[in-house]
Image (tube, rainbow, N blue to C red; front, side):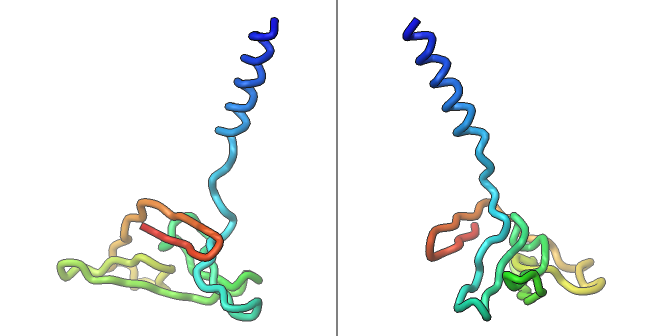
Length: 103
């Protein structure tokens, strides 16, 4: 009987641990003080415009040229300028207490 209870508890703990969401509501990019901070509200760094913690847009745009082709890796471009710029592929994001690292 003791083995059955241990098995049930182990299954419940495994289910709880694997059901945790590994997504943050926003990712910190620049945090100087409460009046000056820039956050990415989406999982992909180039999927939306960057914002202040209040939700006001604080747009940062990052474009890099690789073999003569422009790739957007940060922010959202205004208007119809996106037709000639490709989106860079984001592999991962890692957030610690002092840094947000994208690959």
